[in-house]
Length: 167
Image 1 (spheres, rainbow, N blue to C red):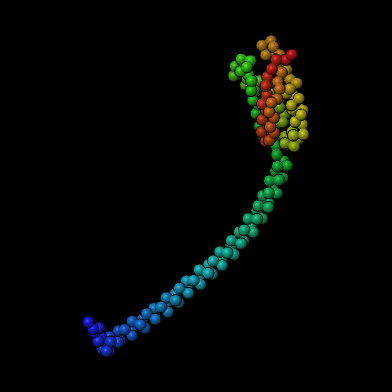
Image 2: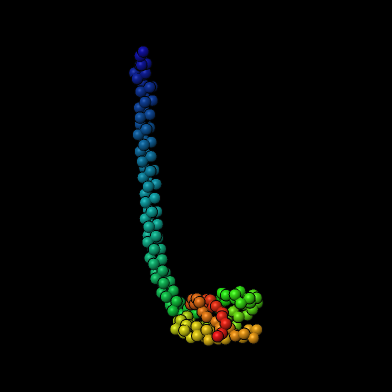
């Protein structure tokens, strides 16, 4: 088997020469276009990096200001709500409305604390405990006293109390 002698004909020689020259020219055009696109992308990446750096700086500034404002706000926290929970009302066969009345009476005693600064309330927490524990509750011709079991101070004052007979 022989390879046909097309390489000797001038038309085939021109075709192969044109194909080779076309391949070289197309490769050069490809490299030029690829280079232009890469240059555009590198410029865009550099611009985006500048924007990212500026945003990081502004974010740090805002975070510093935010932490300063939070620290100042923590210093000026106020009491927003008071929650009282009577834990052993069922032991004395109190009905739910009686338990709610007792809780409401204690909340009324402490209602002056709402909108007060938390630091002042914290410094007077012993006075708050004594106010609750020294109170006697006359219910159905019997006297009861309160004892605080849990006392949490935050923007909401949460107090759990137990009731017992006064001796």
